[in-house]
Every structure is written in C-alpha cells, then in structure tokens.
Image (cartoon, rainbow, N blue to C red; front, side):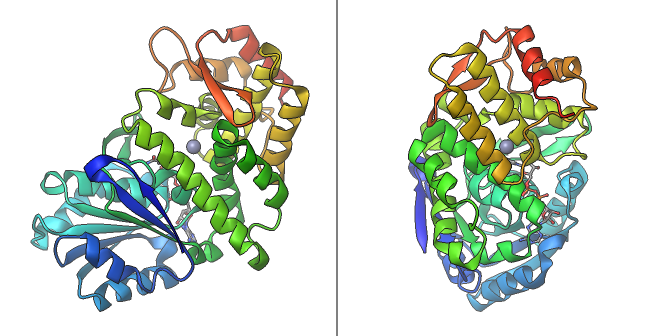
Length: 365
Ligand SMILES: NC(=O)c1ccc[n+]([C@@H]2O[C@H](COP(=O)([O-])OP(=O)(O)OC[C@H]3O[C@@H](n4cnc5c(N)ncnc54)[C@H](O)[C@@H]3O)[C@@H](O)[C@H]2O)c1
Ligand SMILES: [Zn+2]
C-alpha cells in the first residue's frame, strides 16, 4: 500500500492506494470521522460487490451506516439529488459529528462532497473513488459541486475529505472506455510536470491493466495523485499554479460542449485537446519539436483516445466555445501550452487564426 499526504495545513489528509483496501476501509474511516453515524452514498453502477463490501466493513468497524444509492451518470450531479441527500440526513437525525462516505466516480464524489460541505455547514467526508478519473483527478483537491441546466459545475464548494481510499481492485468492473478516458488526465500529469513520468508511461502503458502490470499501475496512480496533490497543495483555490491542470482542457471542454456532452467522453475530448495544444505549440514555440508533438500524440493514441477533431464539428463553433469556457478570464482565453515535456506555461496571446488552423489540420477525415 502507498500513502500520499495532501498538504493543506489543518485540512491535510491521506490518500491510500493499493489492493484489497475496501475490506479494511471501515477501520481506517472510523479513525478519521468524529462519530458513528455515517451515510454511505454510492453509485448504483458500482453496487456489486463493492458497495456491499464497503458497507460491511463500515459496520464491522462499529459505524452506524445508512445506505443511499444514486443513479449512474452525469445527470445525477443535480440539485434534486442534492436535496434528496439532505433530506435523508435530516430525517435520520444526523448530527454534527456524522460523516458521509462516497463510493463511485467523479459524479458520486462531487455530489457527495457538496452534500457533506453543505449539510449542517459541513460534515466529515471520505471518498472512495472507483474510476481512474476519480482516483487521479476528482478525489484530489477538494472541489465538490453539482451542475445546473445552464452549465456544468456551476454550484459547489471547496471541501476537503478526511481520507481518500483508492482500492485498485474496483477497476476490475470498470468499462475499458471509462478506464481509457481517465488515462487522459494521467498523460496530462506527465506533460505538465514530470518528463520521467511521461517516459515511464511510454514504457509501461500497454500492460498497465494486466495482472503483471499491477505494480506499474500502483506507481502510475500514485505519481498522478502526487502531482495533482502538489499542485493543489500550492494553490488550493486556483489562483495560479492550479491552472496548469487545465492543459488540454480549453479546446477539450469546447469540443465536449460542442458535441453536447454525450457523444464523447471527457477524457476523449481532453485527448483531442492535448493534441491540439501540442500542435498549437509546434506552430508557435521553437523549443517544442515535431518529435515532442509526435510523442504526445502517440501516447494519447496508445491509451485508446482520439487525437483528431470529429469531422462533423465546426472549427469556428469550437473556437467560439473556448471563449465561454468558465475558466477563461476577462480579456482573452489563456492557454496552457508546453515548453518541453514535463513543463508548461500559461499564455494569453494565442490568436484565433492559430486555433482555427490547428482545429482544421486535426480534423478527422
Ligand atoms: N472535483 C473535481 O476536481 C473534478 C475533476 C475532474 C472531474 N470531475 C467530475 O467528475 C465527473 C466524471 O467522473 P467519472 O469520469 O468518474 O464519471 P462517473 O462518476 O459518471 O463514472 C463513470 C461511469 O462508470 C461507472 N462506474 C464507476 N466506477 C465503476 C466501477 N468500479 N465499476 C463499474 N462501473 C463503474 C459509473 O456508474 C458511471 O456509469 C464529472 O462530473 C466531472 O465534472 C470533478
Ligand atoms: Zn479533465
């Protein structure tokens, strides 16, 4: 088992990564929550056997568990579901020393986290992520929230968990396409922060999910968690460094919105977005070579992700979407672009014609 400590002063917490951790999760959780009452919120799609194992472990550790399942899918991150959780907590008489444990991907984590942040002005929260994306991305950094009909993640709070338990066994039941989608963030971590890690991925990506690849998978999840933890530890509230995590996401989010959030998975859009950011850099920056670009594109493709813009999407419309990206600041869209593998910078002078040229060049036939 590996432990990564997220350093956030009095809000610091551990992320434990390993195999067979659900069985002993109750004992670990019992040590970090103030009382016995706990709500186990879980994604219906991850019900068996993981939710049962976790519920049993929590009860075995002496916790008084109420179980609440939520439907799978992005639609669950909504105000109705949030209110439903508040009602369960209130009607069961949950008091300030209660806790909420969320088992699932980013949807259950973001929704459960925001319920924990808001009920009684904040109760103890524990995350048990079950997707690659949730393990290396959404469970690190304390962003919680829900979507509104007007847009994604428009309401939320920063609320750090007391503990995150990452049992890699749960990935056995995860769809391959979901797994691949999460790999986009992992590749992103290498590009923005760690050239050795990027090379490690180049060397070990193929067998990562085979039994023989287990040690490499542990290393991968750990290194990605460390990188995200380091970035959010420096910049908890996203005023500076945390923006580098947006690499590949400006164009990625625009494509995701333009494809109306359903046709393409987030990680697929980030794959295309990273390829586009890399090509954009190739056109602007002499330190970024054709070989760097090829390495990036090749690794994304090996992870089973696309690097070309779907032919039916219009370049002008994608460009227009980049301007309304929530993370854009007034005065222009800021792009996170690599200077070399392992290092990025934020630039504000990317011209529209450069973006359009890249989108057109990357158009799938
Ligand atoms: N808080 C943050 O910092 C942050 C960062 C990135 C993304 N997010 C959010 O995360 C969400 C996406 O998360 P996600 O990609 O994990 O999606 P998700 O939670 O919707 O899970 C994807 C699918 O996999 C299923 N599933 C999950 N774990 C499984 C398992 N072990 N076995 C079988 N099926 C399983 C789910 O039922 C679902 O159908 C988005 O809402 C996004 O906004 C948040
Ligand atoms: Zn992302």
